Amino acid sequence: MKDNLLTQGLMSIGFQQAFIPHLEEKMEAYTKELMLFNAAYDLVGANSKEDIIIRHILDSLSPVLIIQQLVENAATNSGQEVVIGDIGSGGGLPGIPLAAALPNTSFVLVERMSKRCAFLSNCVAVLGLKNVTILNEQAERLSQNQFDVAVFRAFRPLDKKMIRILLRILKPTGNLAAYKAKMENIKTEMEAISAFVPEYKTMPLTVPFLENYERHLVLIPKQKN
Image (cartoon, rainbow, N blue to C red; front, side):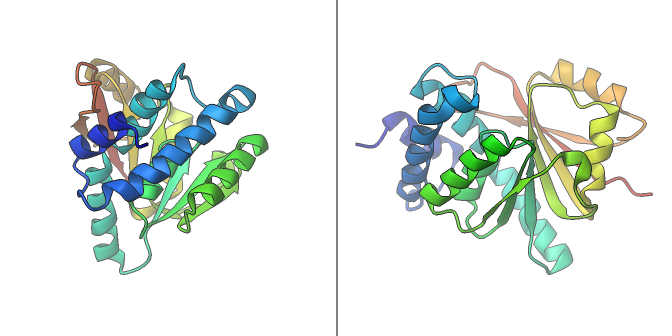
């Protein structure tokens, strides 16, 4: 039996009706894997299936139309295959939901902990995601200029060290897409790294069933030298 909460959430985000059963099936399987291995691998902060679906899966998918537009722009500008990097993927968020939602785009899930990489590899196999590669590496050691888009979903602030690392791994016309919460905190965070990020854009997000919580996607373009 399909989860009505997940169905409603995917409809609310704006996925096409014909695509929802396919995506729903994969996200149901992913939820089961997270629930099965969460305690052993410390993957997500969640106390229930409902928490996983709303606070992690639907939250990860909430900016999918924005990210899809970034992919289309990158493909038009470069004429080459577009690659999205999920930096510090952890339990696969937002990379796995986004990869399932954008099956024609290549994803690289970057995670430094080998046990989490084992979990990610298992999820990719269980979900049958042909567009996902797992990279067991620290962000600091990634090659330059390899991602059209780098997604970053974490609750710690962007600092000077991290923003330099993230911008370095972007292609010349690439963008960082950082999942963030309150606008007030975003402004404070971005002011602290203004020397490295003179321009950025903040896009409000609506997460189904979390409409009263502030969520934003911060878009930071690769800075021109």
